[in-house]
Image (tube, rainbow, N blue to C red; front, top):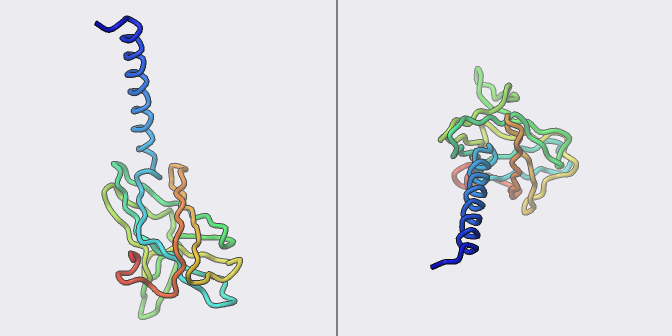
Length: 161
C-alpha cells in the first residue's frame, strides 16, 4: 500500500529517532543532570565585608554517587564548601576536604550552622534583592551553575524558601 520510498523514509526516521533517544539517555548519566538544587540563597553582606555564605539543598536523582569537589564564582576571589560545627562550646568552621558527597537518591542540605558555600575575597558587597551565581564542580568534571537570590536573612525552613 505504501511506496518503497515512503517505507525507506519511515525506517530512516525511526533509526534516527532511536539514535537521538540514545544520546539524550546518555546525557542524563551526566552528574550535572542528576544533581538538583533547590532553595538556593546567598546571605547579604554589610559594606566592607569580604566574605559571604551561600546555602541550598542538593538532591542526587541519579543512580551513582556524586561529589562536589569545587566551587567557582565571579563574585569573589575564591569559593569553597565549608562546614560549621561546635567543638568544646566554640563555634568553628573548616573547608570540607576531599569534596562533599551526595549519595545516589539522597539529599544534602547546606544551611546556616552546617555545610555552606564560603565566598572569600568579595569584589563588592552582596546586596539584598540582587542575585549571584556560583558554579558547582563535580568530580566527573561537569559543572552546575546555580543562580540565587541575595537575602538579608534565612528564609523559613533554612535553605529552602
